[in-house]
Each structure stands twice: as C-alpha cells, then as structure tokens.
Image (cartoon, rainbow over all chains, first blue to last red; front, side):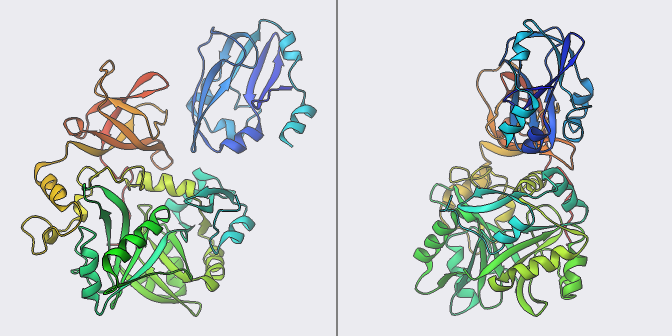
Length: 119
Length: 374
C-alpha cells in the first residue's frame, strides 16, 4: 500500500492502482453523503481535483495521486457513499488509475511514513 | 483558544468524547462519538440531549407582567401582553428598516417575561432591551443557570419519569418543575421539529441533571452538527444565515409570528421598530421570499449557492442560506431566498454548483413532519 499526504491509499491491482481514502480521513470527514466520481477513460494529472465528496459537514475534493488514466470507478460508492465510512479500505474504494509514470507511485509514502504523518 | 467561554457542561462534553469547536464565542460540542448522522437519527427516533447553555437567558420584570410585556412590545412585533400565563411564543427583535436583529422565545412566567436569545446576539440584545426598557422595567441576564434541550419522541417519557408534570405540558407550555430536588424552568419546545423540552437548570446542578437524563437508555448527547441538520429539516431559521438585519419577517416567511393585534387594524397595531415597513409588506407581499428547496440530485447545495431561473439565465434570482444533507429525508435539503415570482411550490429553479447548474424544486417546509404535542 502507498499513501498520499491527502489521505488517499493506493493498492496495486495488476498494472492499475485501486485508490480510496484512509480511515483517518473518513473519521475526520464524518459520514459521507455524496460522491462524484471521474469519467472512466479520463486522463488526469497528479493533484487534479477529480472527485468531489460531501460529508454531513462539508464538501471536499480528492486529487489524482499520480498522472494517469482512470480505468474504472466504484459506482456502488456513488449509490451508497457510506461505504467509504464502513469499509474505507475495501468496498469504499473510489477509482482505479493506470499511472503513466510508475515511478510517481514509488515516490509516495509507505504505511510507516503515513502513520507518522497522522501521528 | 483561551478566549473561548465554556458552559457548565464543558468537562462533561469532553468526558463524553465530544469534538469541540468554537461557536458564538463558546467552546461547544459539534458531535460526540456517534457522529452527526446517527445523532440526528437518534433524536428523531428516541431522544437527544443538547447543551444550549451558550444562549442568553433573560428575565424582564416590571411592576406587573403587563408592564414588562408592554415594554417588550415596543421591541418585538409579537403579542406579548396577550400571552397566557405559563405560555411561550416565538418572536424577533426588529430594526428601523424592518430587518430582524435576532429571533427569540418569550414566556409568560406569571410576574415576569422569561426571554431566551441567541448566543451570538445576547450582549447586543440585552443592551438593546436595557436601553429601551430600563429603569421602569428591569432586564436581568441569568448567568447562574445552564440551559439543556431534551428533544425527541422519547423526551416526554424521560422527563416525565423525573417529574410527572412534564408529561402534562402541551407544546409551548412553560412550568417550574422539580428534577431530583432541583427547581428547573421548563418549556415544552425546542428547535428540532420534535416534541421536547428546554430546561433551565441552576449551574451547580447542571452536570448532575444532564447525567441523570443521559442515564436513560433512550437518551444520547447530541452536538451542534445534528442540531443544525435537525433544525434545517424542520424548516427553522438559523439567525445570521436564514434571517438577519437585512431580511424582514415577511421575506423570511415569519408573518405567522406577528399576531393580528399587532398588525394593521389591530388594537395594538405597530409600535415596534420598522412597523411601517413590515405592516405594509404584510399587505403588499415581499419582493423576495424564503422558501424550502429540494435539490434534484444527491449533491448537497449549501449556504452561498447562487440560484437561477433556468440553466442559461445570467441574472440570479436568489441564494441558498442553509443547505446540507437531511439524514431523515435521506437526501439534500436547503432553504434560501428567491424572487417571489419563482416562489410557488413545485417551481423548478437551478443552483450553480461547482460551475454546473443543477435543478432544485421549491418545496414545502418542514421537510420532515413536525411532531409537536399540541
């Protein structure tokens, strides 16, 4: 697993990465009530705001963790945003991305570094 | 941080695992461990306990109830004089332009009027009342009492178990009750759209009474987050958001709170700040109106979203003043001000969300059925 400073996790799945948000993030955000996912096939750049999430409290954005192409999105999550709260590392995934430059993934944090970040 | 005031229940909130945030100068619980969604649902299903001690509690006392009531009627467009003994009523302070300076509750407690005002406005409100009413009528802020709200369908059973007289009260009744030997001032009212009570408790007994209420299996502590979503679903205004010094009661859809006796042709017509503007607006209708709005999609539309008549019209017709996800409704709900010609129920308008126009329908409020014990 790799992590971003924006509290996303990335898990390798063949030549693509599954991306979601961490339990720390969902705890901070509170109950999610709305998720707007990117289009499948969209070519995105690192730090593009590609997902909108809304909790009971506020709206926030999720940014592309790396440059790449969106290969799949979790439509179940759009139908039931609470999956991100109940199962953030499993059924609550957001999208799959095929990185255009795999070295960008290598530059992300590992679990130890992420745990240090969130203290 | 250290400038924030604390209510008598502050340590209890922290002990209960509350997430504390600054609100109106106080360090207040926004949510507890249940989280906003479950706290909201628990209040609608059973009962929630809210700390509203940050609000201002004020005793307005003249030689007689009538003297105090007449004094207050010079500041609010409400029938205070005709309020029955042990009855409560909603009202607001108006300004010379017909705007709303704050909204409040007024109760006839026999020989005085008991007034509850918003936390953020209380210093201004008290100064405003003192300037207008003293020395003939005394305006005294009560600083040695906490204020709790117990809201939800189980509230009657919970409070009634401590003093059976609680169960006999009707919506908007007030009474002095005895909770475990402590004298409390209770009103059967609240701000969630549910049946319930607001309970003024001596500071020294506040923690014990809160704990006694929380001991009941039906009661959970509820934070400001759920308080906001509950009042929004109930169609109730949050001062400084849905009503303010630049909105009139008629625009705000609060004409119902101005009794006939204070309106044109009434025995005590006018006599409050902005009366000319407000009374003529009751006759002619307001140019803009506060309405309920249901966004068509799942995306919440929050305060500040600009509203348009169509997908391509460039001139706005209004703005959302409160909006979010309604846990009981199961979708987004909002309220806002729009030009009166678009205010008919069922009208489709558009809100601009992240650069895209999304449809909303003008809808009846409350969004959830009120559950008062009338």
